[in-house]
Length: 377
Image 1 (cartoon, rainbow, N blue to C red):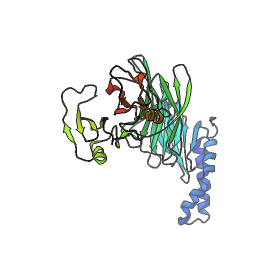
Image 2 (cartoon, rainbow, N blue to C red):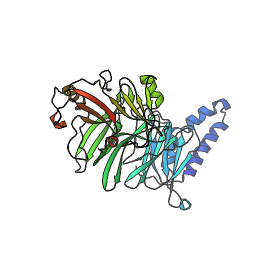
Image 3 (spheres, one colour):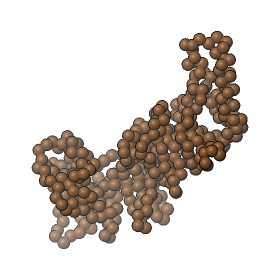
Image 4 (cartoon, rainbow, N blue to C red):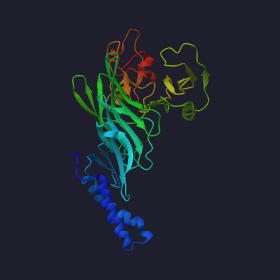
């Protein structure tokens, strides 16, 4: 937005205040003070003060209901190069200071319900966003780091955004979801050599994003913020959530000294229809195994179903990734939560996954993370 440079903001406020005082002196009753302020400090009057200010005012961003505006005011010499963010509420005489910000602010973004806003500041090649409660100006402890300004969910409870990191010369892209009040974000997608740019979060729950590969090829996609499951159990579920889904009729095997490929020692809970592995420290589900025909995935696939049914159900929605060990992983699908849904089939002794036929039947289903299966994708 074009920067504005006219009369000092304080002088503009003084003019509005004088007009307001004059209105009160000519007969307004105390009971009508609030109505008077609402009528005197309207959106139009606030905009008049901002646009007539000598201070440089920019990034003026109104809430969806047009009852609050956030903006940046250029800092003075005492601010050591930092600018200042403010919020001004319709009906109030003065704006409220929010925080000092870098002069490289990307912008603001309001939640659809007008209760929250975020300030996105430049961080390296990306951005770091601070989330505020518009009424109290209390900050969320977690600050999303992203490629661009995060996108709000329709119900204003979460944000979706793309993130990029480099590990030992490898480029990894993430599509993350942060839910207000949580201590950390969660992965929706995680992939090597891809970047995700979130564009919209629609009312039907679809998150619209663009997937870019290393060559810059773009592919527009949609996904929902869901967690796949087997028998109603999801990765990251707590012990109590597992019990709610499957009951308390299980046999527990305590952790041993060797966690294998698990990132921590695990408890093993054996139910009649599946086996659950739960982190000893995190208390979260890390893997779900089943060989029982009564257990099914959230898309309705069971042990005993044909490969034809599996592929018809999963291939339209999910990709079968390439293994870091080489080759495409047929019958293994990259699903939400940076997880993988593995389907094993009744193949002959020397057959490989490339030999899966439509009539082959599912013998085992596993939901876990690629790293736990000694892979990465």
